[in-house]
Image 1 (cartoon, rainbow, N blue to C red):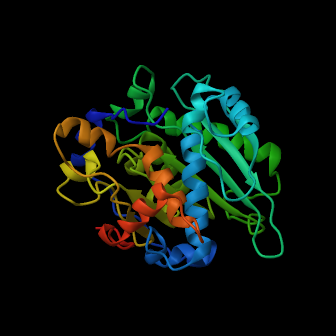
Image 2: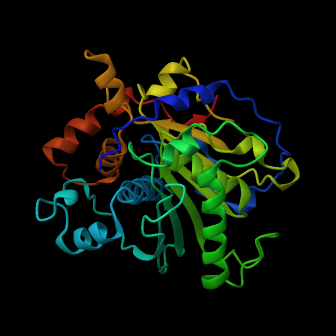
Length: 321
Protein backbone atom coordinates (compact mmCIF):
# COMPACT_ATOMS: atom_id res chain seq x y z
CA UNK A 1 0.00 0.00 0.00
CA UNK A 2 1.35 3.41 -0.93
CA UNK A 3 -0.02 5.19 2.11
CA UNK A 4 -2.09 7.74 0.15
CA UNK A 5 -4.99 7.59 2.59
CA UNK A 6 -4.86 10.65 4.81
CA UNK A 7 -6.20 10.80 8.37
CA UNK A 8 -7.84 14.21 7.80
CA UNK A 9 -9.24 14.30 11.29
CA UNK A 10 -5.71 14.59 12.62
CA UNK A 11 -5.79 18.22 11.52
CA UNK A 12 -7.62 18.77 14.81
CA UNK A 13 -4.39 17.89 16.55
CA UNK A 14 -2.80 21.13 15.34
CA UNK A 15 -4.65 22.92 18.08
CA UNK A 16 -3.23 20.74 20.85
CA UNK A 17 -0.86 22.30 23.36
CA UNK A 18 2.24 20.72 24.73
CA UNK A 19 4.05 21.03 27.98
CA UNK A 20 7.57 22.40 28.08
CA UNK A 21 9.99 19.46 28.17
CA UNK A 22 12.87 19.11 30.57
CA UNK A 23 15.70 19.86 28.17
CA UNK A 24 18.66 17.59 28.79
CA UNK A 25 22.05 17.83 27.11
CA UNK A 26 22.18 14.19 26.01
CA UNK A 27 23.59 14.61 22.51
CA UNK A 28 26.27 12.00 23.17
CA UNK A 29 23.49 9.38 23.31
CA UNK A 30 22.67 9.74 19.60
CA UNK A 31 24.56 9.10 16.34
CA UNK A 32 26.61 12.19 15.52
CA UNK A 33 25.22 12.36 11.99
CA UNK A 34 21.79 13.41 13.33
CA UNK A 35 23.12 16.20 15.51
CA UNK A 36 23.54 18.34 12.39
CA UNK A 37 20.07 19.28 11.00
CA UNK A 38 21.59 19.55 7.51
CA UNK A 39 21.78 15.76 7.35
CA UNK A 40 17.99 15.49 7.65
CA UNK A 41 17.02 15.66 3.99
CA UNK A 42 18.20 15.43 0.43
CA UNK A 43 20.86 18.14 0.73
CA UNK A 44 23.01 16.15 3.14
CA UNK A 45 26.64 16.02 2.07
CA UNK A 46 27.15 12.87 4.16
CA UNK A 47 26.84 9.72 2.01
CA UNK A 48 26.12 7.74 5.18
CA UNK A 49 23.14 9.96 5.95
CA UNK A 50 21.69 9.71 2.43
CA UNK A 51 22.08 5.92 2.35
CA UNK A 52 20.59 5.51 5.80
CA UNK A 53 17.64 7.78 5.00
CA UNK A 54 16.94 5.69 1.91
CA UNK A 55 16.99 2.46 3.93
CA UNK A 56 14.90 3.79 6.79
CA UNK A 57 12.29 5.13 4.38
CA UNK A 58 12.15 1.79 2.56
CA UNK A 59 11.64 -0.04 5.87
CA UNK A 60 8.91 2.44 6.78
CA UNK A 61 7.21 1.67 3.46
CA UNK A 62 7.45 -2.08 4.07
CA UNK A 63 5.52 -1.65 7.31
CA UNK A 64 2.42 -1.31 5.10
CA UNK A 65 2.94 -4.87 3.84
CA UNK A 66 1.82 -7.87 5.82
CA UNK A 67 4.63 -10.02 7.15
CA UNK A 68 3.72 -12.72 4.60
CA UNK A 69 3.79 -10.18 1.76
CA UNK A 70 7.16 -8.84 2.86
CA UNK A 71 8.62 -12.32 3.05
CA UNK A 72 7.35 -13.05 -0.46
CA UNK A 73 8.62 -9.75 -1.82
CA UNK A 74 12.04 -10.18 -0.25
CA UNK A 75 12.36 -13.44 -2.19
CA UNK A 76 10.79 -12.23 -5.45
CA UNK A 77 12.08 -8.65 -5.32
CA UNK A 78 10.12 -5.69 -6.61
CA UNK A 79 7.89 -6.37 -9.58
CA UNK A 80 4.59 -7.97 -10.47
CA UNK A 81 5.03 -11.53 -9.12
CA UNK A 82 3.09 -10.46 -6.02
CA UNK A 83 0.76 -7.48 -6.39
CA UNK A 84 1.99 -5.87 -3.17
CA UNK A 85 5.59 -6.06 -4.44
CA UNK A 86 4.91 -3.22 -6.86
CA UNK A 87 5.45 -1.00 -3.83
CA UNK A 88 8.35 -3.01 -2.38
CA UNK A 89 11.56 -1.00 -2.35
CA UNK A 90 14.99 -2.61 -2.02
CA UNK A 91 17.38 -1.35 0.64
CA UNK A 92 21.02 -0.34 0.24
CA UNK A 93 22.21 -2.83 2.85
CA UNK A 94 20.82 -6.15 4.12
CA UNK A 95 18.18 -6.04 6.87
CA UNK A 96 16.78 -9.05 8.70
CA UNK A 97 13.26 -9.16 10.16
CA UNK A 98 13.62 -10.16 13.81
CA UNK A 99 10.16 -9.35 15.16
CA UNK A 100 6.75 -7.81 14.60
CA UNK A 101 3.16 -8.13 15.71
CA UNK A 102 1.73 -9.92 12.67
CA UNK A 103 -0.96 -7.27 12.13
CA UNK A 104 -3.17 -8.62 14.91
CA UNK A 105 -3.78 -5.83 17.35
CA UNK A 106 -6.58 -4.46 19.49
CA UNK A 107 -5.67 -0.90 18.46
CA UNK A 108 -4.64 -1.40 14.83
CA UNK A 109 -0.93 -1.29 15.68
CA UNK A 110 1.31 -2.93 13.06
CA UNK A 111 5.09 -2.87 13.19
CA UNK A 112 8.21 -4.69 12.10
CA UNK A 113 11.60 -5.00 13.80
CA UNK A 114 14.76 -5.14 11.68
CA UNK A 115 18.44 -5.47 12.42
CA UNK A 116 21.50 -4.92 10.28
CA UNK A 117 24.85 -6.32 11.41
CA UNK A 118 27.80 -4.01 11.66
CA UNK A 119 31.08 -4.35 9.86
CA UNK A 120 34.42 -2.59 9.94
CA UNK A 121 32.84 0.66 8.74
CA UNK A 122 29.34 0.70 10.23
CA UNK A 123 27.85 -0.02 13.62
CA UNK A 124 25.07 -2.59 14.08
CA UNK A 125 21.61 -1.04 13.75
CA UNK A 126 18.21 -1.98 15.15
CA UNK A 127 15.03 -0.48 13.66
CA UNK A 128 11.44 -0.49 14.92
CA UNK A 129 9.19 0.44 11.95
CA UNK A 130 5.54 1.41 12.56
CA UNK A 131 2.75 1.39 9.97
CA UNK A 132 0.59 4.44 9.29
CA UNK A 133 -3.17 4.65 9.05
CA UNK A 134 -5.19 2.04 7.19
CA UNK A 135 -8.47 3.67 6.18
CA UNK A 136 -10.93 1.03 7.44
CA UNK A 137 -9.17 0.17 10.65
CA UNK A 138 -8.91 0.76 14.39
CA UNK A 139 -6.18 3.29 13.68
CA UNK A 140 -8.85 5.99 13.93
CA UNK A 141 -9.19 5.32 17.65
CA UNK A 142 -5.68 6.73 17.98
CA UNK A 143 -6.09 9.42 15.29
CA UNK A 144 -9.10 10.87 17.13
CA UNK A 145 -7.82 10.36 20.65
CA UNK A 146 -8.25 13.58 22.61
CA UNK A 147 -7.19 12.77 26.17
CA UNK A 148 -3.86 14.31 27.13
CA UNK A 149 -3.24 12.65 30.48
CA UNK A 150 -2.90 9.16 28.92
CA UNK A 151 -0.95 8.21 25.76
CA UNK A 152 -3.11 7.35 22.70
CA UNK A 153 -4.02 3.64 22.31
CA UNK A 154 -1.40 2.65 19.73
CA UNK A 155 1.36 4.40 21.66
CA UNK A 156 0.42 2.46 24.79
CA UNK A 157 0.33 -0.86 22.95
CA UNK A 158 3.57 -0.12 21.09
CA UNK A 159 5.34 0.77 24.32
CA UNK A 160 4.22 -2.47 25.99
CA UNK A 161 5.13 -4.69 23.03
CA UNK A 162 8.49 -3.11 22.24
CA UNK A 163 9.53 -3.19 25.88
CA UNK A 164 8.51 -6.85 26.07
CA UNK A 165 10.59 -7.62 22.96
CA UNK A 166 13.56 -5.78 24.45
CA UNK A 167 13.24 -7.71 27.72
CA UNK A 168 13.50 -10.96 25.76
CA UNK A 169 16.01 -10.07 23.05
CA UNK A 170 18.09 -7.34 24.69
CA UNK A 171 17.91 -8.23 28.40
CA UNK A 172 21.16 -6.39 29.07
CA UNK A 173 19.55 -3.05 28.22
CA UNK A 174 18.65 -0.81 31.14
CA UNK A 175 15.72 1.28 29.89
CA UNK A 176 15.93 3.59 32.88
CA UNK A 177 19.51 4.70 32.30
CA UNK A 178 20.38 3.54 28.75
CA UNK A 179 23.24 1.40 30.07
CA UNK A 180 24.03 -1.54 27.80
CA UNK A 181 22.53 0.16 24.71
CA UNK A 182 25.78 1.71 23.50
CA UNK A 183 26.70 -1.17 21.19
CA UNK A 184 24.24 -0.44 18.36
CA UNK A 185 22.37 2.46 16.82
CA UNK A 186 18.65 2.24 17.59
CA UNK A 187 16.02 3.82 15.34
CA UNK A 188 12.25 4.14 15.33
CA UNK A 189 10.68 5.00 11.99
CA UNK A 190 7.20 5.41 10.57
CA UNK A 191 4.91 7.31 8.25
CA UNK A 192 1.86 9.39 9.21
CA UNK A 193 0.35 7.82 12.35
CA UNK A 194 3.32 5.43 12.37
CA UNK A 195 5.58 8.48 12.60
CA UNK A 196 3.67 9.69 15.65
CA UNK A 197 4.01 6.31 17.36
CA UNK A 198 7.72 6.23 16.48
CA UNK A 199 8.30 9.64 18.04
CA UNK A 200 6.50 8.64 21.22
CA UNK A 201 8.82 5.64 21.49
CA UNK A 202 11.86 7.88 21.00
CA UNK A 203 10.56 10.28 23.67
CA UNK A 204 10.28 7.45 26.18
CA UNK A 205 13.21 5.13 25.34
CA UNK A 206 16.87 6.06 25.90
CA UNK A 207 19.38 6.30 23.04
CA UNK A 208 16.64 5.95 20.37
CA UNK A 209 16.63 8.17 17.30
CA UNK A 210 13.39 8.85 15.39
CA UNK A 211 13.40 9.27 11.60
CA UNK A 212 9.82 9.87 10.49
CA UNK A 213 7.99 10.74 7.28
CA UNK A 214 5.01 13.10 6.98
CA UNK A 215 4.35 12.34 10.66
CA UNK A 216 1.07 13.01 12.45
CA UNK A 217 1.28 15.43 15.39
CA UNK A 218 -0.71 12.96 17.52
CA UNK A 219 2.40 11.70 19.29
CA UNK A 220 1.06 11.49 22.84
CA UNK A 221 3.81 13.91 23.84
CA UNK A 222 1.56 15.82 26.23
CA UNK A 223 0.98 12.70 28.32
CA UNK A 224 4.68 12.16 29.10
CA UNK A 225 5.94 13.17 32.52
CA UNK A 226 8.46 15.96 31.81
CA UNK A 227 10.88 14.31 34.24
CA UNK A 228 10.90 11.20 32.02
CA UNK A 229 11.20 12.96 28.67
CA UNK A 230 14.30 11.86 26.72
CA UNK A 231 14.83 14.84 24.33
CA UNK A 232 15.74 12.50 21.46
CA UNK A 233 17.29 13.26 18.10
CA UNK A 234 14.41 13.41 15.58
CA UNK A 235 14.57 13.84 11.82
CA UNK A 236 11.31 14.59 10.04
CA UNK A 237 11.07 14.29 6.25
CA UNK A 238 8.05 15.92 4.59
CA UNK A 239 6.61 16.62 1.19
CA UNK A 240 6.37 20.35 0.62
CA UNK A 241 2.60 20.16 0.03
CA UNK A 242 1.81 17.45 2.58
CA UNK A 243 -1.62 18.20 4.00
CA UNK A 244 -0.80 18.83 7.68
CA UNK A 245 2.12 21.06 6.73
CA UNK A 246 -0.11 22.95 4.28
CA UNK A 247 -2.94 23.38 6.79
CA UNK A 248 -0.42 24.58 9.38
CA UNK A 249 0.65 27.37 7.03
CA UNK A 250 4.16 26.09 6.39
CA UNK A 251 4.97 25.40 10.02
CA UNK A 252 5.74 21.93 11.28
CA UNK A 253 2.64 20.80 13.23
CA UNK A 254 4.55 19.14 16.02
CA UNK A 255 6.34 19.87 19.25
CA UNK A 256 9.88 20.85 18.29
CA UNK A 257 12.47 20.41 21.07
CA UNK A 258 16.05 21.33 20.42
CA UNK A 259 17.17 18.07 18.81
CA UNK A 260 14.41 18.01 16.16
CA UNK A 261 15.41 18.56 12.54
CA UNK A 262 13.26 18.83 9.42
CA UNK A 263 13.94 18.17 5.75
CA UNK A 264 11.82 18.18 2.61
CA UNK A 265 11.82 16.27 -0.66
CA UNK A 266 9.42 18.46 -2.70
CA UNK A 267 8.39 15.72 -5.08
CA UNK A 268 4.73 16.73 -5.29
CA UNK A 269 3.25 20.00 -6.51
CA UNK A 270 -0.08 21.51 -5.55
CA UNK A 271 -2.18 21.36 -8.71
CA UNK A 272 -5.80 20.62 -9.68
CA UNK A 273 -7.56 18.55 -8.52
CA UNK A 274 -6.32 19.97 -5.23
CA UNK A 275 -7.66 17.25 -2.93
CA UNK A 276 -5.94 14.55 -4.96
CA UNK A 277 -2.76 16.63 -4.99
CA UNK A 278 -2.80 16.95 -1.20
CA UNK A 279 -3.44 13.21 -0.87
CA UNK A 280 -0.58 12.23 -3.16
CA UNK A 281 1.74 14.56 -1.27
CA UNK A 282 1.17 12.42 1.83
CA UNK A 283 2.52 9.28 0.15
CA UNK A 284 5.17 7.26 1.97
CA UNK A 285 6.14 5.41 -1.19
CA UNK A 286 6.90 8.63 -3.09
CA UNK A 287 9.20 9.85 -0.32
CA UNK A 288 11.03 6.53 -0.14
CA UNK A 289 11.37 6.34 -3.91
CA UNK A 290 12.83 9.85 -4.03
CA UNK A 291 15.26 9.24 -1.16
CA UNK A 292 16.46 6.07 -2.88
CA UNK A 293 17.26 8.14 -5.98
CA UNK A 294 19.10 10.78 -3.95
CA UNK A 295 21.19 8.07 -2.30
CA UNK A 296 22.23 6.52 -5.61
CA UNK A 297 25.67 7.33 -6.91
CA UNK A 298 27.10 6.94 -10.38
CA UNK A 299 24.77 6.52 -13.34
CA UNK A 300 21.15 7.35 -12.57
CA UNK A 301 18.10 5.89 -14.28
CA UNK A 302 16.03 8.32 -16.32
CA UNK A 303 13.43 8.36 -13.56
CA UNK A 304 16.00 9.12 -10.86
CA UNK A 305 17.71 11.72 -13.02
CA UNK A 306 14.42 13.64 -13.21
CA UNK A 307 13.90 13.38 -9.46
CA UNK A 308 17.44 14.47 -8.59
CA UNK A 309 17.19 17.36 -11.05
CA UNK A 310 14.55 18.85 -8.74
CA UNK A 311 16.87 18.74 -5.75
CA UNK A 312 17.37 22.52 -5.85
CA UNK A 313 13.67 23.00 -5.03
CA UNK A 314 13.92 21.05 -1.76
CA UNK A 315 14.44 22.95 1.48
CA UNK A 316 17.70 22.19 3.22
CA UNK A 317 17.56 20.31 6.50
CA UNK A 318 17.16 22.69 9.42
CA UNK A 319 15.90 22.91 12.96
CA UNK A 320 12.11 22.57 12.90
CA UNK A 321 9.96 25.65 13.45
